[in-house]
Structure formats: structure tokens, C-alpha cells
Image (cartoon, rainbow, N blue to C red; front, side, top):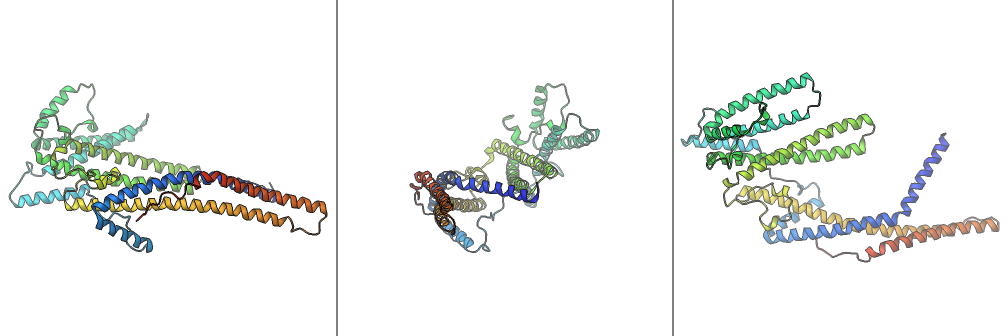
Length: 435
């Protein structure tokens, strides 16, 4: 096309798109309002139930939350009420705490270690690390293609050999703290009939959580409690990593859709997203392993600890919020729970306001669409008498055309009012006071 034809063609497409958009207002806005009203009612009801429960149990805290979020809405330089201020336990923090506890026991003359270098807590933490390495090695073996290179096989074999040596050394120390594991391994080996040699990532470590049920007294209670505390921290670490990778995936998907063009850029972005998806899968598997171990060693918990989510104030929280505070029997667990409830209350309030605003905006948009059609109809009527100095035939033709366009605008307005009346007649919905 030449420059003139190209501009005319583009103008035709733009005008056609705009005309279709205008004539489709009665359908598009109706669909949006039909979807928004139930969402508004649902989120308002959810927030009211959540808020009433919290007010009954924590009235002073809810008042502070309200003042904090109103202050932040008035001045965004104030502390962000949506930000979690407490930190969840990490695996390294629990290992440090256990080491400090062992140091205190040594100062009092209590030595529970049966090995000169490896204490019970170090044994369990090392076993959890080996378990992670086994899972990583298994994923790498599964990722091999049908025709792996010699270099790939060499690297995997070297890592497999190193892991095999580490497992053998760990098992020698494990016998000191868990003697019954020898008999369990003998029975397991005798019952396992296989023509191939067991690979390092297939070796069962027989941690306390895996030994439950294998013997009436499978290991000392202290060792079980060590695994319980370390598995708690492992679950929290896995959830934190999962949160971060899910947020990263969402950001990368939006960036890819909005910014990247061309095959090369999209191929690279797809490769990055594949790695993030693998990380998400790894985090989920790690959390499931920790959760399974926690369920199996449930008996080591105190009766006063309880489960998160048993109180009425937690019934509207999602499982991921329940997981933030595993216990609420101490001040630390209560602080974590209060912080989680605070953030969830702010989010629930924001969702309720967001859908209330959406319904209000859609109603205002509908009003403005009808006002626009009225204005446009009046504008066309004014065009009927603007041209002067024409003969009668042309003047009548221009007037007829303008009046026809005005009638079209009025018809579209009436069509919108007819389409929207069933739902707008029921608005506004139930008035709910949002704190």
C-alpha cells in the first residue's frame, strides 16, 4: 500500500473496532456487573463473618488494625499493614537453637551424645540434608533424555558415588542412636527382591518418622523430638520458597505477555519459566515430605500445643495462613498467629472494598454510557440544520440522515436500559458496614 491507502485502511479498522465497542456496551457492561455483584456480596459476607469473630475474640487488636490501615490509606509513608512483621522459623535457626541447647546441657554436665563429633540433632539434620540430596539426584536422573552424553553420565555418577559414601558414613553413626534400625534394615533387605543394585537415591534412611510402626520402641523420644522440630522448620522453609517462586512465576508471565515479542525472546522466557516451574514443583515436594514426617511423629507434641486453626477466629483462613504458626501455646506462636490474622484481615477488608468499588464504577459507567448516547443524539439533531445555502432536496437529505443517526443513538440507549434494568433494579445490594 501507499502511505495514503495505509492510513485510510488503518482508520477503517480503528473506526470499525470503536463502533463495535460502542454497540456492544450493553452486553460487555452487563456481563461485568453480573460477575461483580455476587463477588461483592460474597466478599462482604466473608469479611463481616471474619471481622465479627475477631472482634469477639480480639477487640483491642481489631481496633488497632483499623487505625493502622486507615492511617496507611491516608498516608502511604506509614507502616504497611499488609506486610508480615514476624518471621517464620527456618531450618538454620532451629539447628542453631538445638546446638545452643546442647551447649547448655554440656555446661550442666549432661552429655547425650554417643559420638565424639555427631550429636543427635546433627544426626537428624544431616539425614534431612541427605534426603534432599537424594530427591535432587533422582530428579536429575529422571531429566536425562533418551540419549544422554558421556559428560552428563559422568557428572551424575560422580555425584551418586559421593552420596553413596555419605550415606554409609551416616548410617554408621545412626546405629549408635537408633540401634533398632539394624534389624529393620535386615528385614527390609530380605523382603526386597531385586535383580539390580540399589542406587543411592533409592536407599531408605529410616529416620524416626519412617521407623514408626516398624518397632514398638524404634528410637529414643529425644531423637523423635529433634526430627519434629527440624521438620517444622523444613516445612516453613519450603512454604517460604514456594511463595517466592509463585510470585516470580506470576511476574514473569505478566512480563512475557506485555513486553516480549519475537520467537527468540519468547523462547528464552519460556526456558526461564520452565526452571521456575521446576523450582515450584521441588518446593511442593519438599513441603509434602516434611508434612508427612510431621504427621508420623505427631505423638511427640504436647497436649497443650494443639493445631493451628482450631479456634473460631481461624475458620476463614486458608491453609497457608494456618501453617504460619504451628503452635499457639506460647507467646511466640501467638505473635505469629496474630500477625497472620492481621494481614488476612487487611486483605479481606481490601477485597470487600475493591468489589464494592467495582460495582459502583460499573453503575457509574452505565450512567455515563446512557448520557453519552443522549448527548450524541442531540448532537446529530443539531447537525440537521447546520448546513445553509443548499437546495431543498439536499437539505432534506442531510436532515433525514442526521435524524436517522440521532434515532440510532436513542435506540442504543434504550437497548442498554432494557438490558441493564433487571440487574440495576436490584441495586444497590445489601448495605454492609465495612470497618
